[in-house]
Amino acid sequence: MTATMDVPEGGLPRVLIVESDPEIARQLVCALASARGGLPSQGGPAESPSAQDVAGCQVVQSLALLHRVDLQQFGAALVASVMHEGCGLDAMAYLRGLAPHLPVVMIGDVADAPMAPEAIRAGASEFVLLTGHEAATIPLAVRKAVVHRQLKLDHDRLQQSLTRSMAEQAEVNRRLEQTVAQLEDLARTDDLTGLTNRRWLSLMLEGRWSESERHQIGLGFLLIDLDGFKGLNDSLGHHRGDEVLKQVGLMMQDICRDIDVAARYGGDEFCILLPHADLDATLQVGRRLVSRFYEEVETWDLGDTKLGISVGASHRSLCGVSDPEELVRQADEAMYAAKRQGVGLMLHTGSKVSHLQVA
Image 1 (cartoon, one colour):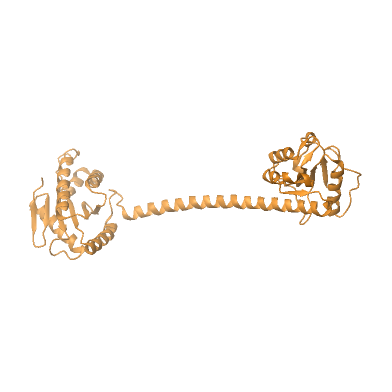
Image 2 (cartoon, rainbow, N blue to C red):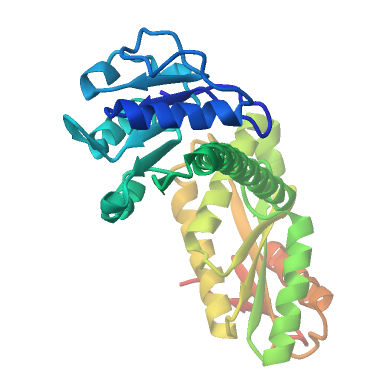
């Protein structure tokens, strides 16, 4: 338990004296009484813990009697290094166990000085030698012990407060980062399909185009449109149409590399931006997309509705592609050419649109 005695600034608290020698105990009481501005009115130290305090002190002459003392009454303790029935370190251990924050000063003769390091390690604030100058040394040692105790308590409270504040701040930061991540995800994600939205696609396209130009790295683009989607909405309803768009989104995510950007371009149009991809790799993704679509569409419950796919491909390495807008425009022309001719994949070569057979 912790001592909670209030001590006037510069004053002395109630002191517990654990000393079996009556004469030494009397000297300690007198020293403390003198520091308080008077001498003890009683003739000697109390012989039991139930006796009335002498000059703000209570003397306990044995370890057995120490067990009967309410330690909460005291703001400091003076403990003899050697007692008639044992060692002061035993009393120290008892006090530290029941009142860990009670400041303790150990006292002893010059012959007991070798015990000082062990006493300090055991929790004593100080080891004071009895040299005949107790009127000066004992009150000073008690005051120092009390101040040291208070500083330590204040430090512990501040440390606990700091730790708690840091933990709370860490939790606030974690939630803030989570919220920012969610907002960023919402800002770049299409609500229906989970793909990248067109706004974020434009930002990614600008960045990947700059990277491609700077390092001469391949950059491909696929624009995708669902054929017959309006008829599906008219016959099966917009809810079923939304489910189809979600299935197409999942399919696109499955065939793309981690570095690719699969996006919903608008309505039933989709696209894939392919960084670090040469022309062959871009066309391979386009062929795989068309094949996968016609494999999966057979498993979708669309009734009599016929649903197809048209894919237009473009690549930065082909002639006429001078900026990202042109890359998208050429893929758009190829996609509409594929739609007109009823083929799955068309490539814009810069001068014309070519039909590519899907394996």
